[in-house]
Length: 96
Image (tube, rainbow, N blue to C red):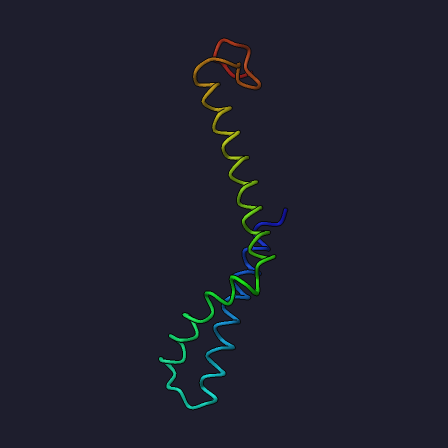
């Protein structure tokens, strides 16, 4: 999984879409701030449909990362409870 790359690509694609919509509105003489505001509002629902695959990859990557964090947190909690010895320890609490 390349979560960082996927997130960067998705953010870049959404910003590019805002830019394209804004530029199109500027071509028909819409003021810059109005064109930018409309670009942001229009790009949100469009990106949900146009970048569906990329959005799914980002969501899947986030799920994997969350599962890893959850497993690590549970491992640490079990070590704190004393259920499992910490790696590299001899059971006395002193590190080797």
